[in-house]
Image 1 (spheres, rainbow, N blue to C red):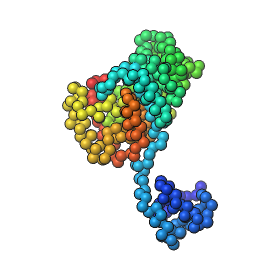
Image 2: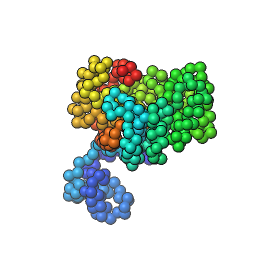
Image 3: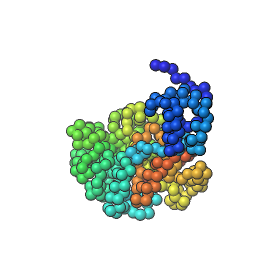
Image 4: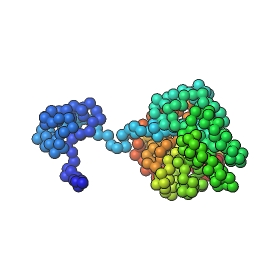
Length: 354
């Protein structure tokens, strides 16, 4: 294999194609060299630019986009819509309540056109599965979750089959509570889920976990196809302790949830028992604004910029929210020091404690 030989100097012009002027430049270069499409040698191009500097003026006015400004064309495919609000009023920042059926259908249709790859629901999300059953979900991977094993393993499997029937298919079935796996019926439950997968009733099985559950250790023990974990600009614990890297090393698909931490970063006035954190959150928003971006773009860019995350799941309560998320997902990645936004207050990072 030939060794890599770095250029001794920077290129004296733009040779990427971002604008029509770039295309005109390349056409002129190929015409002057008399080369067939794709066959011009870089050394010949450099010599031409040295001997005829005027040719550089064709696209000299076009500003080269840095890497952080390149749109993430696959962002839509890595987005998932959390549907808990389709089935019930949920979330401290959700002032609209349960999403009406007509609005849910509109949201899903727009998400499908944008290439959003996944819908995340659960048997415990109120009417969410029933709402999805009345909409066109053919464009998405379908993820749902189990009911509590306290009902008994046969009841869990029976309810999962009801989910499959309602949704038309289940591409991934997650255990909704880690305590179900760690309790007396845990091994029996996991074996039953494996049988569902083996018979082709579901495409894969996985676990929905919290940071305190030690997701990497769970994956080592149960060998799930996927894990859903909390991960956000403010909550970087699983990145910092290496858990996300360990999950990827084990071949586990990683779904990040709570990527906006229930909208906490967007709230000017936090919930009553989190008022103590208002100055901290204001400081975070101030730093984001100083970088010329928004909390939404910063939060989404951080998660999508993490290579260990396969899917970023976000709840949506209105079409406008989805449009804002899609725009943020395709926006240039802001130049921010991500690590500087990580918080350590477990109370602040755990919505169940709010």
